[in-house]
Image (cartoon, rainbow, N blue to C red; front, top):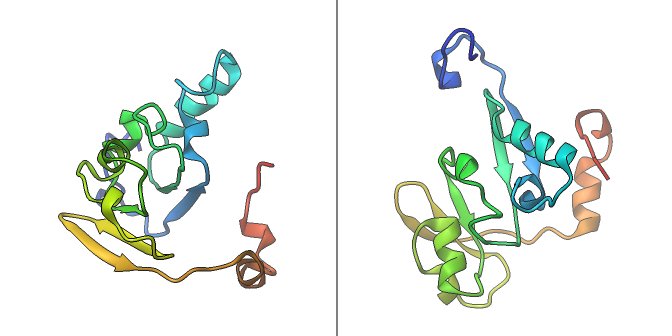
Length: 142
């Protein structure tokens, strides 16, 4: 994509989309991975991938955990209850998540504006049942 000077996959003839789900996205932050130069190299590489849809999840909501390179490319945001206004601002660029009621699945979804939504709770046994037989498309780094 870079060699053809594409900045957006919708400007290409590529129709298939690849989604990358990152749990504990703070692990992709070069500022957090510590002094391990190999880990920093991989973290920077992952941030620069073009043509992929990134689902970036973190419980560590600090400016270092959500690198600016990732944050600037976020199309939609979803925040569950946040511990403080600063956490809400990191995820949503706005306050509000810190005031959500403590109801499992209650969240703020933001594209162009904040919307309070209710999402279903999926426990581990249900998730593993849904993913059964899909091991060929799942990359688990642990």
